[in-house]
Amino acid sequence: MISHWRLGALLALFFMSSSAFAHDDDLESVYENFFRLGCVKASRSQIATVNRGNAKKTLFLEKCAASTADSTWCTQIIRPNPASLATFQCTYGSSQIHQLIHPDESTWRNAFNTVKLVEELQKDGIQVCEIYNWWRPEPYNKNVGGARGRHPNGTSSDVRFCTKEDQEKAFLKLCELRKEGRLRALGYYPSAALHFGIGDSRGNTWGRNCP
Image (cartoon, rainbow, N blue to C red; front, side):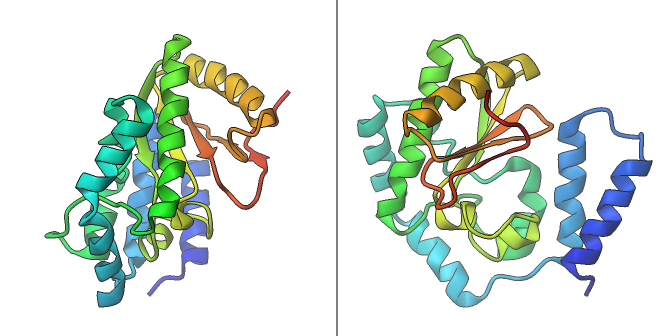
């Protein structure tokens, strides 16, 4: 099996030399599928943990609705990244429902607070297209090339904005909210997406510094 380190090195060379992809979303899909080449299958206990969380879907949605004034984003935050569906199926099998809810209910507040922030950004006229990551357990997180911590702990979510302009506006707004303690970490991606580190243990920024 090719190591993730070697896959990452080959991927970096590919990105530097390739001009075949015009959009960051295309590159993200290639990235996700590239790591699928070294896919690690989830164990029975890991699948059981995922299923314990999924069994709480109704409760999660009820609590999310109550916490966020019935936000429609509640149903989306439990859906893994659509771009990594193939990797998800490689990890858990094609019959596994494409859904991830952390079985530890104490982590749910991080998801709810992400939804609240998204709602606030929309009220400010910032267009949000999707929430595409929240809980991303191992080995799925490893299979998509994710860093340890953060997503595997259910402390953060990734949010994609409809345009780069929306992303820029959201970034500046979230920098202000970070000073107020509304989130601990904030990541800026080349695509029109941001990392909302609501409860991340490491309170930092990356990709771009706040003013």
